[in-house]
Image (cartoon, rainbow, N blue to C red; front, top):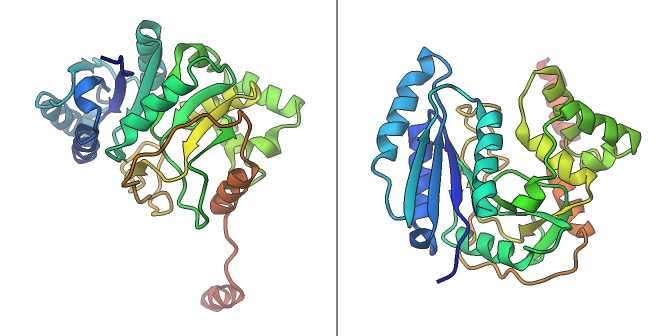
Length: 296
């Protein structure tokens, strides 16, 4: 029997989202052969207590995995500390890990792709992680492809790669600026990762993900993506810690297995350009601008 990577699920106070995430994982082909570790964060305040209690009550009924381990935090760690601590604990014991948050619905082929990718690139130090989500770009993408850096919506990594994670946002920003990499880090100016990092330093956000991306980006590491998304983010409905309401990041899940096969260890420039175009804010049409001006 193969040793499949343990799954770490991070939950807080959204029982409906959590249930949808777990039910999707239960439908995965490798669920029954995978160990599930659920990290349940403590309530930040009285307003969050009802949701936290509801989540923890539901977790007691979770089955369908090789084993289920529930870690109930007595205090509120916050998402960043919860993930950094939980991922470190698991990789130090199991050497590899698959990470899911409580607002990610996965395809039945998600765990298969993740484990295939982990096994395929286990000894390639240039590869930082395997990612399950892809943006819903209009053009067809390769079956799998690499982009520089790391990502955060349904991902997997190894102890060797997680060792590169630097929690010091200020040190990361200095390196990006000294090496003139901020434009590239921002996906050619299409997304404000640098501003997000500055916000983390200033304390206006506590993003672990931008620091994970920056750590891997500075090390010139790669992340493997699927050509069709295996993850749908249902959390951009104002219920998340840092999310705003939008449908931009919703995806149609792959209804087939994604073939994880060895490909050259280099960034796919076409996929990068398609992602950049998808994320880049679109200017309103001339007609829309006229209408907006009339209204104002």
